[in-house]
Amino acid sequence: MASDALVPETRVLAIASHVVHGYVGNKMATCVMQAMGCDVSAINTVHYSNHTAYKQVKGTKTTAAELEQLYEGLRQSNLTNFDVLLTGYVPSAEAVRSVGKIGRDIKFNSGTKPGSFFWVLDPVMGDNGKLYIPEDEVPEYKALLREADLILPNQFEAETLSETPIHDLNSLAQAIQVLHTTYRVPHVIITSLRLTRDNQIPPSRPVTQPHTPSTEPSDPLSSSSSSTLPQNKPAASQPGNDEVVENLTIIGSTATSDFKPRLFRIDTPALPLFFSGTGDMFAALTVPRLIEAVEQAPAEQNLRATSSWRSRDEVAAEDLPLARAAQKVLASMQAVLGKTAESCKQAMDVYDARIARGGGGEESEKKRHLALMNASEVVVPRHVDSLMNPPDLERFRPRAVRAEVGGVKKESNELGVLHLGIGKKGEGAVQVEVDESEGSGFEKLERPEA
Image 1 (tube, helix red, strand yellow):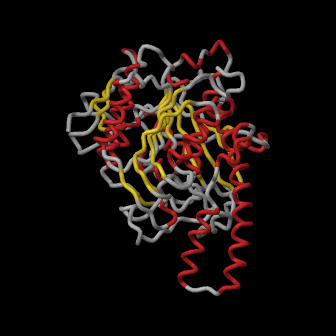
Image 2 (cartoon, rainbow, N blue to C red; image 1 turned 90 degrees about the horizontal axis):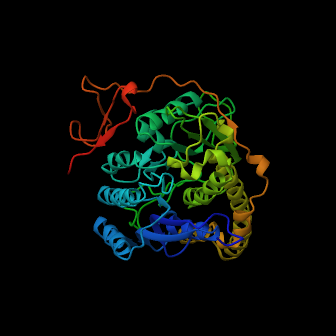
Image 3 (cartoon, helix red, strand yellow; image 1 turned 180 degrees about the vertical axis):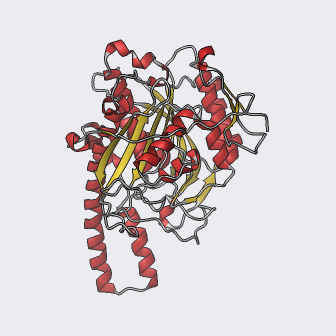
């Protein structure tokens, strides 16, 4: 390990989208993680000219067979000894199943060494209260949850996966409890939440830091599709609530040994600009920062050799490695996005002054949108110092969240079988419950062959 490296030697396989121009998906993730000392191998799920907020894009989707072929090439050359798997946007249900096969193969090969493999799953499914993937992908994502160590859904995705509407801290805690208990996910961070000052959470709607690719149409390659992507600014007041949301909030949790949540929150000021790729940036920064926090945990905890790097029950929510990692992640992101917003404003002021001298029109509006998207690209190579040395850390100190969580455990039938809502009823995945006195409350998940 080099003396200036942030993390020990870490091999990461990143499976996500790719763009020729800009920084989203694997273009963002690879740059960020490599800058922080990780050795990154990338499998691209799509190959686009640019991100979809430009409202016009060309490119191709990677098929499930092509994903598996690329991984098989790595496997044949003994190149699959990865420490971390980071998965993002996947364009089809078949491709999600292929990602599952890849993840399970890596996990199986590391099965004799607890803590030697960690899967960060960003379930990129939708936003604005709508899916932007085919509906048949949702059950496939649910089937993957039990394999992941950390998931990073936004509010809409957390509601979809947990089947729990989120409207305040208690219902949010309920959703996280479902993800912990039903799917046995050890770590959860729900991103881009908008909490009012009285801790109410508006229904799923446009958020400021969408995953990529973010697009309303079912075909993101359609150049004629319109985009309703929001600007990154404080939300308007909700009916019956005059509290304007000025911050974005993330709420995370690491489950206890009996899968109860330990909730923490971090608030960050909203910025007056739309950015693409920030979900990918958050996920990519979380990988090395979590490894760093795990390495810095007390030696007696031996977290790096503990399954899913899960802290002992006595560790408080605000002291969790996940919380410490998120603190540095958000500090870095706020610095980078703030600088990007400043440079974007300068570029657009120059652009608008030039256009004002030459007249307007419909065509100029389109050109201005394209110029704005280009000016707001988060060019991470210009901001490596902010990634490595996040400023104003105290501003992003995690705080424990106190919330009431009711009973969320779904009832199993007389045979102890619990249907997880994955696939068609009677044909999908099930969880076999056993008496706690006889062993673990989570013994087996089975999914029949298609």
